[in-house]
Image 1: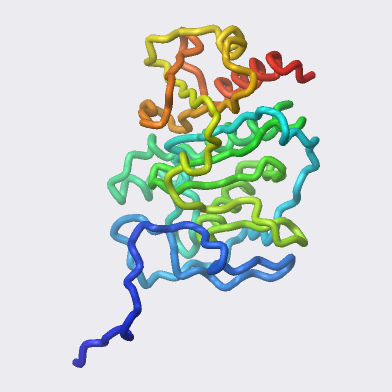
Image 2: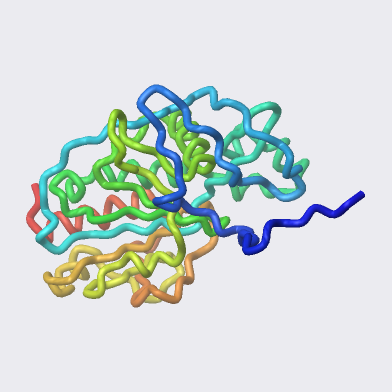
Length: 281
């Protein structure tokens, strides 16, 4: 058999470099589905020839929610780290892996089901987008980094699905297509973007991480009150079931309770403290 050669000058693409390129990605029209991307997220050991089937809960576009304009004022940026958002072909369709629905599949593939908790990221994202900080336009960005080191950019004015089932279908589509556009418009409300996340952060900002194991136990309301009012605040919260975040770009790690807290409740404390500082009612 004659070996197939590539054309001269054609470069080999790097594995794992998966993100939405503005000029290369296809748009999703209001009622039609774009052709499947050749870049698919696969679990280890899965055949590269497997092609994704149609998504049952297909969402060609999602609506936007109006928010007040607060871009000229200091704002908040949330980064959710180590989110369990991984898809795999289960049966005939690609699905978002979770411990509740795919325990047997995960054990069969030598994975720990306890590590697959996408509901944590779902609850955390909903808490951030529902906050008064976002409603008044002071949420400048929301980034989610998965355990596979994929970085998602979620626009603050996106209207996310309210049920986990539809959220799961949306994540499957995002991880396959690399972006989700607004209904009837070309704006990309969810995208996979290039790492690292620090390149998207403003120069004048305070990067604050949260960990129950931190020795710095603080009252969040008092702590936020001491931060310079002219700085943007970057809050880094873990979206995994166990473990802790240890990111080099974080300037200060805090513990805001003597007790372990869920990511969603931790975020609610953070947003309430910021709302009190900026007198957002």
